[in-house]
Image (cartoon, rainbow over all chains, first blue to last red; front, side, top):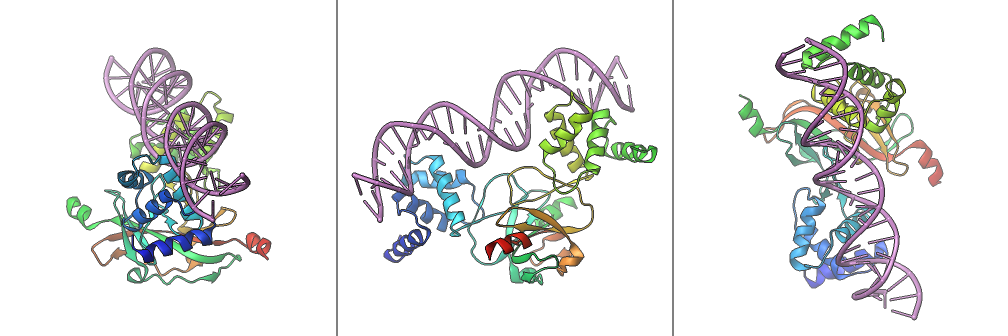
Length: 144
Length: 144
DNA sequence: GTTCTTGCAAAGGATTTGCATCCTC
DNA sequence: GAGGATGCAAATCCTTTGCAAGAAC
C-alpha cells in the first residue's frame, strides 16, 4: 500500500473512531483489491496469506465495522450470507435464477428512473437497491 | 378453509407433483392468512396451534417446496434469514435503515420505469426486486 | 403396496460472544 | 497506562439431513 493509501486508511479510521491496527489495514487493503461480492471466508483466506495468525472472528468484526462506518457496503442478495460490495459506482445486480451468478450493471446502463426524496406515505428514499432477476446469456443458450 | 379453497389447494399440489397432506394444507392456509414477510419460526408457531405435533423441519421443507413450485416467493431482504412473501401484487420494499422495518409499496405507486426483456450484455430481465433504503416517517420524526 | 412425508434428533454452516492477552493512542 | 482490538474456543442461530414410522395415491 502506498504512503498515500496508508494516509487515506488512517484518516478513515480516525473519522470512524477506530484504531489503525495492522490487521485492519490488511483487511482494508485486501478488500480494495478484490472484485465482485466476496464472502467473509474469501476475505479471510486472502488476509491469512499475509497474516497467518488472523482469526475468522477478527475478519467478521472488521467487515461489520467497515460496513457500519460506511467504508464498504453490504450486498443484499437472494443469497444467505454476508457479502461485501466492492464496486463503489452506483450500480445494481443481475441475478441469474438458473445458475445463481450475480453480476453488476451500472445504474445508468440499467436506466431506471429512480427518484430520491419523499415517497407517498412519508418514507424518505435515500438509495435504490435493485436486483434484476432473470437469465444470464449462458443459461439462455443452454435452455435452447 | 372453504371447499373451493381446498380444491384450489389440491390442484396446486397436483400441478407441483406434491401429495396433499394435512400438514401441507395447514401451512398453506396459515400462509394465506398472514401478512408481511413471516419467518419460518412465525409460520411454525401458527401452524403449531392447529397441529401441535408439527416439527420445524416440516415447515422448512414445505416452505421451500412452495417457493420452488412458485406458490409463494422468497423475499430478498437486507436481513439474514428466510422470509416468505405473502403479498401477491407486484410490489417493492421500503427498508428503513434506522429501525429496520420493512413495508411494501405497490410497483405502480413507486413508479419505476422497469423494462423487461434483453439488457445490454444479453441478460434477460424477468423481474425487478427493488429495495428502497431510507428512513420511515417515524424515524424521521425521531431524528429531528 | 409403493412412494412421498413426517417428526425427531443430530449435524452443519455461518456468525457471534466471552475472555485473556496484546497493541494503539 | 487505558481502552480498544485480537485470537481462540465455545456458543448460538438458522437451516438441513438421515432415518424410522406414518400417510397419500
